[in-house]
Amino acid sequence: MDPQAWFILKQLESAGAPPLELLTPDQARLGADFRLLAGPPEDVAKVENRTIPVPGGEIPVRIYTPAGEGPFPALVYYHGGGWVIGNLDTVDVPCRMLANRAGCVVVSVDYRLAPEHKFPTAAEDSYAAVKWVAEHAASIQADPERIAVGGDSAGGNLAAVVALMAREQGGPSLAYQMLIYPVTNHSYETESYRENANGYFLTKNTMVWFWNHYLRDDQDGKNPYASPLLAEDLSGLPPALVITAGFDPLRDEGEAYAERLKAAGVPVEATRYDGMIHGFFWMPGVLVQGNAAINQAANALKHAFQVVKTI
Image 1: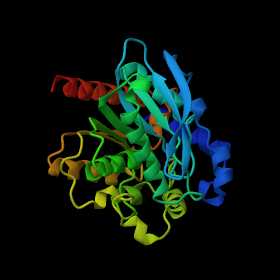
Image 2: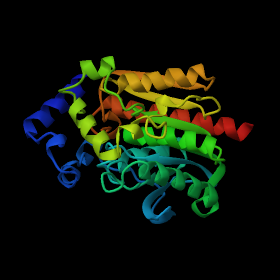
Image 3: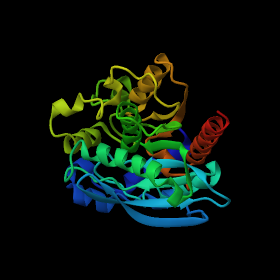
Image 4: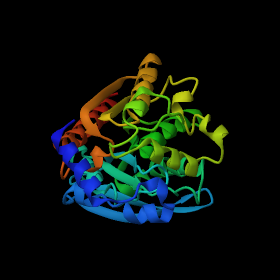
């Protein structure tokens, strides 16, 4: 294990916070503030908070615009937190870094959380957000022909699901999907779940707690819009970056999804950060590898946007 990641685990252990699965969702949300690990926020040319319409309501988004002349490519970003916790502030630092490094507008989406809003609300909100970006691109200095989706953990799940929805429901056409240690399957049967069930930040019991809050019943877990690994056909999806962490229960399902995409003819860049724990993408302030992953993601986005531009 990476010594910096080990140090973070020891710090978290000594803080003595109760495991999430012993808390109510409200208590968990209050306690889940990892911003100190993200480091100071970088300046971006413009940051704007807005609300956008979704079926049955509206949700907040935060729009990061880089310096320079638009229209810029756009990344629609979904935060992690097991569909239950997390918010725009959780991923503020990574979103700023991605906007600056990839030279793209980043639209960070505050989809509605479970258990107040169970499956498929988060997925439907996420899809509504990408459609909104495509339709209102001019108003946010974005190029509707160059839109990517991305996210970490449950947000990686939502990005993968939105890519499926866009393919099946008539667009928008997506340039890329950036999946950071994504949840891809409602199952706990992998080797990485056995190896990393306890002691590495995200535990098996916490994932059970997240899934139980998110799904209405076990049948929902078999739906590809909850478990994209179970989709019958992954052909025709946008090129993907899949980043996984060695000491993460979700490692194997993320890598299995990358393999299935490859087998379906989708261009995939898959990288395992061996010594890392779940959540490291949120922690560039204290983890060198967190910084490296954000840089890798930004470079992959930049390249994908350039490819689309030249076609």
